[in-house]
Image 1 (cartoon, rainbow, N blue to C red):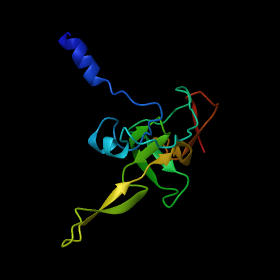
Image 2: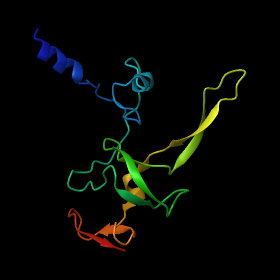
Image 3: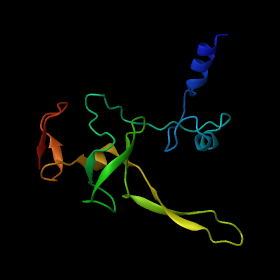
Length: 144
């Protein structure tokens, strides 16, 4: 087998039919621990959103509409299109212990949880106000 064909096979992550996307990148060690090949997890129903209607990307500034951080603005750090998730920098966090042993309490670190796409709104960079789409499907936006 040619080396280029072998490298092409190695680079493609083959996912089983009912693969459950999470916060980890597919194929990483943490993902393999959460999605072992012998387990069968129930599929998650996700509302499909077309590429034209998707308007959130990494680096965008958004405002949270629901939850404990409602009304706060933050920068999009990660987008997981397969689950319609958006992760914001420093917002919607929960705390967890890392490095806990029998003798040591561990260190408490903040961990950012994802938000659904309908729980955030884009922010206009000029007046820092949340926007709403003027016409559905178009990129023209209007400040509210």
